[in-house]
Length: 617
Image: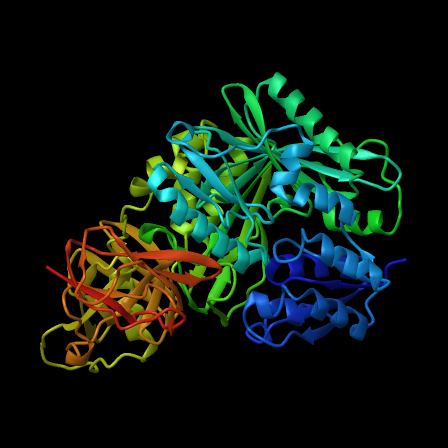
């Protein structure tokens, strides 16, 4: 019987497993890198073991260190979570060879399905041969991984070699395996998957479908169960194919079989031999705990002949520390506050005050809504996200809200090209015109601002300037201290209430409420981030025109061939690649011109805002 579980992972999945284990009376063990020493999953566990180092390759991808940690802590089982070593057959064997229980499928099943190339062979799908122009577009994919890492769409044959190199590097960094392959890219398809669960006694549960079509960088953003509006023939086809994959591999435990549905046909993509990030929507619809079932199966228990009947609808949104308007660039910094209404489920590996760094995935949390109908679940999730307090790095929260309310999504007409078509509109600025005023009034009320006190004689209004982040729009706020308290320098606005955390303004006879959080020079008003601007600009902070600055902390992993100071470059030409949060980001020339400065070299680590290059006309 399993009595102590080590989770070979971090973040929200580790916290998720620990919560279930506590409910089951099972002791928990965390492993952690040096940056994660005080992370939430470490605090949640009963015991913790350090993995010396910072990068995934030094820590969470070291199978030998993880197995040793389990033995040192007295664990009798290992749960792999997802990502890192979760689909690594050698790791599964190392766990069982050490006399530990493996809460996952047999290594042979992982070998059969964890490599996307071998999985396609097993399912009778011939590999794509040498790529020609007639094959385009194609998709480059990592054979050993998932989560969109190591994946590239190639539309021009001339770009294929560069994208293969980039995909191999990204896959090696994320999964410790640089193998990639190429397959045809199907335009306009829906990403549909089937959750499976099998025990050691031959029982197989098919736990319905999920739709995961809303993706950026081929990584899922919004998922739901069941997949809406599928043709009965498609439903029958994906169910039959999923069961065939399970039985052909002797699969045990939880897994997911994924398809691309287009033109009424379901194309097999892969089988993920692990728990998926989006598993909570299936749990909500079937009323089950998949982690608890994983533990029961690993303990040799028999599943009921049939799973519970599904009811209702569930939708999940992934909250990322990233800027959708800047090509989804990952963001770093302090997460001051994360809170959502109690109407939704929050799965997170972060807590207030945590530092969001560069070494790991940018996901902060998963927010899940369940309701009797799809429309109700979507409405609940959008409303909860809109009311959420997310104070810290820039996130995709506003994009999620707008996506959930887009007519293509509400009408269940989405496909994997959703963001390619709509990203510009979904990220267009839509600022609350009163947020900057509320921020200034709230800061004045706290006494943390350098404002003058009340005077008996008329005086000029106090003036503060703010910049809305990440849009960059600047606002000038004017107000006065009066014998009745703070007053806006605008007759149309009346201050009803002002405190350090709450401001109420009356505008045109309508009272508007604002929640406020102030952290140094940053103020968050109803989720809008504002930075207080100094009265004067420091000349040392001025940059030459054409300067390219690092959008996030990271490592320069490649400089394009032929790129050196004095070289002529074209607009949009890639100059170098910056790696952060296990993904590569291209730094491109903003315009045609001459590269007059290139102060970085391959392997150099840079901070956000560091000068990478200068291109002048």
